[in-house]
Length: 333
Length: 245
Figure (cartoon, each protein chain N blue to C red):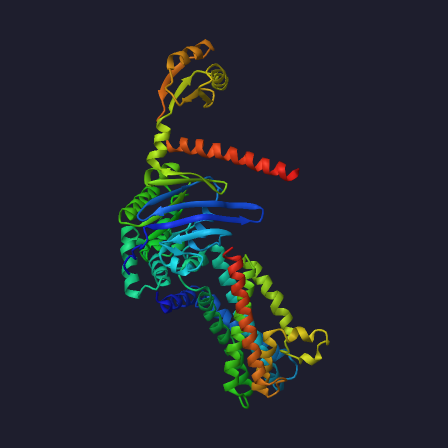
């Protein structure tokens, strides 16, 4: 079975996607698109709506409103045609524990109509590529967590789907396996597979993805390239002071004395200071010493995507909380 | 997309993973034999009662064998997330569910074999219309499988499936005319009997084994097909609502 090319330029196109479970608004009017060959990250805290979104995209949940197009196919009118084009790696390794690794892969190939010879050849190829050849004839139930994850990914790509959904692929596995899986994901993408990756490991998304969407409380609060997001962080200056004592008191006093700075205590022995402009260290060191603490070290902190994530989602979450409170007050009135 | 390959693989996988496992195989023999032994030996009327009891024993064996396996296997796969893998495949839901029920139907029909053989050894097979018995067995198994599917869709845990199955199965022992005619039931219970597929299956078995059916065979078959279709349609509708929320 050869990979089917995506005729349309957009691999995934989502407009106004909405889903409510009872009183909970799981996904609220989400819009985004993923281009062919792109590795797109979908980041958010637990309960943000990541899995609900992915379930709607792959046909395991029905949207209340909105449209989903996979490779130009409208998923509401032709869900099975769209499912033929996607591979899914769920957040749990859900293969059959009583079947061997090889049998599991062959079974998954058969579900997509692959001929026996093709699926057996592809299963062997993937077992080899994922370093599982030795375990091919062992039952899946006896695999380690890392091996289970790898075989679940292999099952998702067995039929060579042009679009792959990966839900938390490295959660709960050891460092070596996670690194290997990240390399496999990068290789798959390099070979042309469009990948939609949900994760709450920000560093993983930063390393793998070209574009990232932040989702909080069912809403996308930011979509941009990793480069642009990092540029936003690069514009800020952050310095961390290692101090002898009074971290919390110092952060509070510094915030009052230097209104343009964001001061945060990192325990009792460190304070971080951030500003959109450059931070002059001299006055800060003197200020700390005047308040009875010694400064052991002052170093510039390299900005990370995590900082951007916290800042963007934090601001938006607070705004949404205010919106929700306003709506509740309005409702009460 | 070769649908035949996909459906064949689901059937073969289920057969290997569940139905051909030694505990299930032995259960498929021991359970119907236990039913048969219990009724034949303890009925108190000697060998004369075997023919009268056989339709009921066959129907019970098929009902219990089919519903137990299907409700448990589907609930187990649902719980482990493995069923999601099937729902994600480009297979129409109706075909998928038919593939999941095929083995249960065959297992149910196989469950009828031990009591039939035992009865044959005890009293012989004279007067049995096999051309009617076999389609009746298949239709009872089909309707029981779809009852099992209906239960599996409703339950979220394996133990719930077992409990919920019994909620349907045990009343059927008394309501469906298996061991005594429906006419002996209180009048207010009889409409309920006529809503249950096993009533028509048991009547067809009584007709084909002892020539003592209460309704025309065509009505029995027609009602079995109709109720099976309704159960299947209702189950598929529930699957769409509950499993693909």
